[in-house]
Length: 97
Image (cartoon, rainbow, N blue to C red; front, top):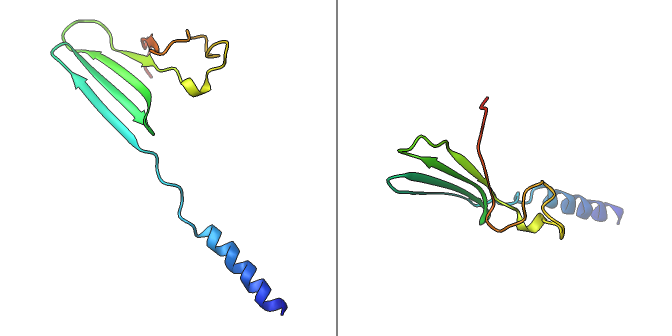
């Protein structure tokens, strides 16, 4: 009687190990451009993670927009020193490695 119970427990343990892994997150890259700028946007699971603005004709440097994560903001602010708003903050890269 002990043996069928042990086999049942072993079968239950093996099925949980062999279960399918969680699906990969949906990643979307979109590009919008006109004759002056190119805007590249990266979304993961429908949430914007990165926005990059590149100028085509002018000598202005490219910049990123740091998107505020609305789900992680506290009542007092973002905790990153960045202002609390829905639009994000512009960031210019000074050095590249």
